[in-house]
Image 1 (tube, rainbow, N blue to C red):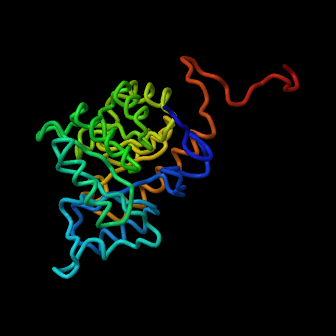
Image 2: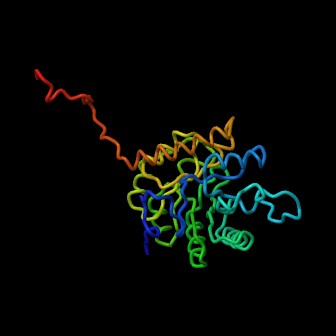
Image 3: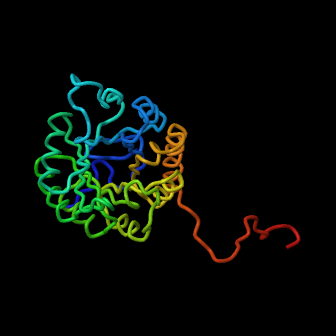
Length: 269
């Protein structure tokens, strides 16, 4: 059964609503590929993000065994979104999500079930099965999925708190490759639509936000930039500018010119 996001539904201006929580920032960042934890911490701070993802299978959860990435995240300001990166079956993804909830005491989960090692595209049947189980277990599920309107609708019907269609393959930096599918997803969705994967630079983020996407999740575009801190700032401004443009309503596209200073009413005309 479809439900609007609590308190507002899609398109609200007060922030990104996920599982009843309102995040002031519509930008979600990752935690991988940074040169060091301090650079990551500064990038998160500069970006203004209120949520970051962590690959639960690749993080040291036992602080007694050495430094943990968790020590470099200000959890008083930033929510942890554990993800099931590296899982190729529904069974593995479910077990990983359960581990994350136990270790991090959160019901948030970014659900990834991959179907191919080269493209890292999702395995949709396995993804749907994992989502069905995790929603029933009380998780707030944010699934990474193809830019497929049918798959997104099915995930929403299962009770996912958002849908996260890819803009392009993970880490590719290609931006949104199929804006037409994305528009269909946006048109039919009643939960937040968050572009996940494929962002390369700030203009890609602005395009997504101007289309009406509720948020953007990215990692490599910041962590892999020559100057991650400047790119983090650029992404923050891109999200804000794109959202403002969407809310303000752009002018219609026209084939021919239209004078910006009309002459009607001018003396002598």
